[in-house]
Image 1 (tube, rainbow, N blue to C red):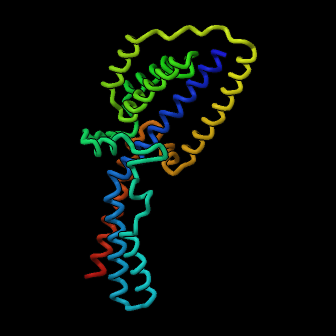
Image 2: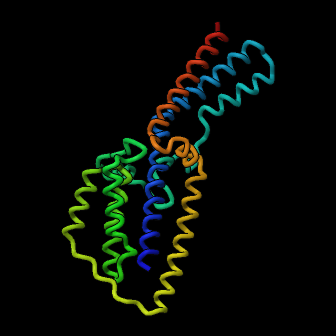
Image 3: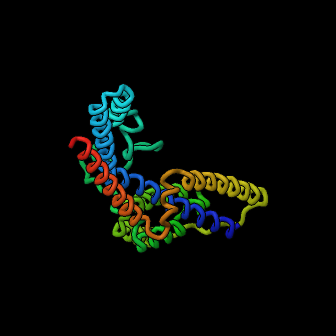
Length: 247
């Protein structure tokens, strides 16, 4: 049972660390590269408009109108809150803005190696599934929530403080032997939880951001720089094309 629980905890840690990288990559991609995508859309519209003005062709005019419409589309609810909330509610940075707290967006896709090590150690020690009593489980859930938030921001200092807090806290109660019925129920729960985590992992990996991250598993932050370089080259090419059209 202990081996099965530990294996599940390791799997959950792996899924959580990847989820943080996916969310950080998505938000940094939007923050750093969004203006370049907007510039490309504007250049595409200007090129289409210049071509339509030169040819006067109805089809070129239609394409120009479509290109211009893509520059400033009417945002949907999801777009309005992109990067600020998900199914669980507001992200910490959004809540901070509403409460006048300092906003601390992620600085990189993957937290530092020290932060990753601290997170893994804390998750292994304080995981709620290791608790037997309900009160101890609740204490661990509250603590792990803070650990997850600190790791998502890559806050190594806070993770060290949390490690000290856990070390100074009450020692977790020893697990007492369980009846065979409880053992089977626990094994069934572990199997169901593993299946759920497998689905979450597959969804993350198959998503657009997850697929991009798999292109640079060793250095996902470098991937942002490579995309930025390509976008800059695309912008330069479109500007040259527009200059040639307007003469």
